[in-house]
Length: 425
Image (cartoon, rainbow, N blue to C red; front, side, top):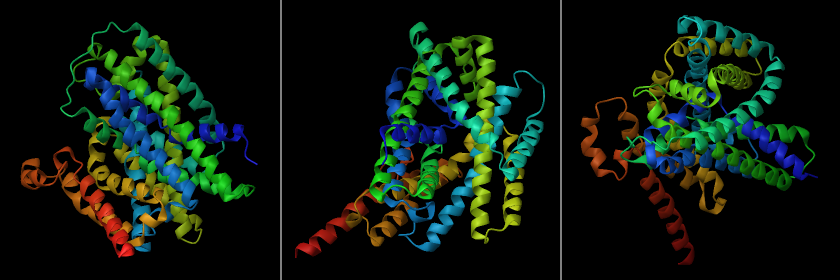
């Protein structure tokens, strides 16, 4: 029987899995740019960085399967390709970004070394820990998260009560949409479909509880984790807004976070936070590399060689991409996220709704339409935007990089109305 204590333990564990130190650089920067519109930005950011990821956990509570099960109603080939794409992007962007964040926050302020040296040492250690599956990493993660969260709450409280009240004007034309799109950069929706599967596997291994009991546990844990993420993300956006006039005009995301911590905690506090963030980034990178290598190992008949090769390739990619600046990596990620995030969102939502509204036809049609109408959003960050002006003016919300939303909704409603009409005639 699952006790209340179990819900909280699972909730904190889930929060720790979601809580990526690299994500901390995003909210303060958003707050700085949003000015008095910070609360509107929070609504958009929370939608894609908290709500959708937690809905992914709810979907896993309903499915109680693996990442593959999320897309199998579309087709086995699609689901396999989707899984592969998730892991490829994970090792190509969020994993290297942890190295870049570590360099800019924990190395660059104290040592005059080039990012490539940090990246080589960083992913050399990542490889060692991933191959040896050292339990120290999981232990560090358990202790790091509570300490970082405590420090962040202190930063937020000090910022809220010590602010001079001078807030810079908003630079966003559409704060809500900008919050939504910046939420993509957390990778939390993608994390939700991956992390949820990990939790299901862990609970199934215990094998002591019924399907319904596990469903309730996962759902309650999701609510607890989501509440924690909401408080931290919202608080950091507010803090960035309140202190926006104190940051340099062209400050990077990591510089804004460092400045925010310096103004609230002092130099020692900033140095301490930087070290903690670096360690938390490292545990995230080890987790991504290990998880990806495990997946490839699984589809290669548990080949240890496949695991080693995947880990080596992942770390080489990490070294190359991780040697660039954080802001460049974030910019590099935009096209991939514009392609993958809409599909991930609709898969999450389709797996949540009752099965009678989400047949194979609905899955296939909605995913296909989402893919087609997100092409302009994807291309908008690759080719000159002027060349897409005509088509973007035709598709509703396309100018806000959300051109897939209404078509997907219309197809979903249309197919279900048609099915309902056929049944009643």
